[in-house]
Length: 471
Image (cartoon, rainbow, N blue to C red; front, side):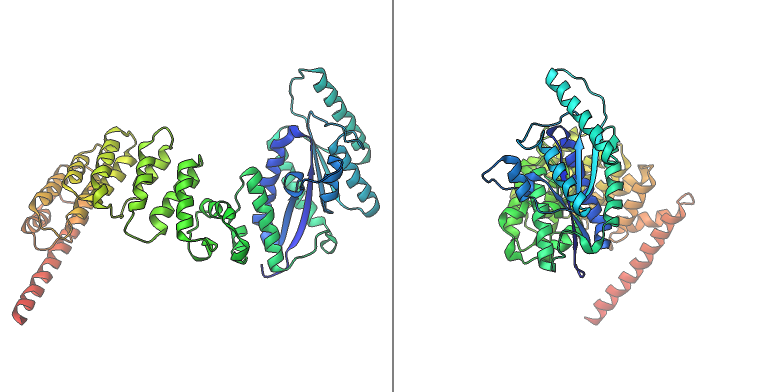
């Protein structure tokens, strides 16, 4: 935040039956802050009694009124409930409106926007009919003083309030907002505290623009209670948890949170991000401490979605499976290969089995080499070559040459050629590429690979002769 941040405070008043609109409003405000607000150096603070009022003595509505500081925009929302009397007004929403309206008449502040939901519903009790009658009477009263906005359902409300907020904030006299432009630290801390309160109340994470602001805060102001909110937001934004995005938390703390998230969360996006952190972010070969939780994810089909289970398997690619877990993981992957109809699971299993590379795992790879899906066979080719890299073994070479001759998939044949072209010194491979060159029906691209291999083979032989002579 290179410039001073202008804060526009928006107070929302409503009875209890429009909770969906209140949550929707939070999303809209967050969206505007992340887009236009960032460019305009303007932050909208949504003021609600749930997040801005602390317990105190006195008449309940008076406690709320006393603790809500001046604001720039008042948003009122009603549908079928009017509310209960407060002792000073017919309902809490009405009392809040009357305070705002009194201020507007004296200072033309705050801007007042009132919305009424006209969606149909069934009246089932006399009390509901009485509440609706009061809402309609209040709406008629407001219409005499100014414009109110009618909408039918939450989607219409979202569209309308978004447009109106853009317009209202632009029309505000920038020099007369009730909020004082804070310093960088104060502004960032204010935004952080509001965002954290919203997350605790409604579970809403923030976007990257907010995280950019939070990254400038003194890490001494952040406690362990903030870790799920901050790291969860980082996970939601698909940002690598490195350096500044760790917010001063230790790798052990984030690891423990990630494992807890996988065990307890129902959010697939967060679970997948936590798996990625465990396997990708911690740049290390030893993943022993992750195996148990990954096995849990892959095994539990009822608890975890197909997306999470697939991600857990795919994330093991290019990871060294500890020897003590190789048999357990192999059995699990073979079971998945046999029982999952989605070919992506079999493709991922083939790659990871190639990483394990035990005789038991390679037996599974050879089975997948005959799969009906070309992408799975291609992955099995890669796995077989990866497992035998640096090993001159006619058995696996023969398997691939035989597969090349029988496979009708161009992508599989290309993968086989690509894998064999870097294996020098094997006479069977040399004869195979010579045969491709002599075959008039071989595709031109295959002949190019064969010619490249044979040229490099001759260079390889010359280098070996020179090395032998020099020694």
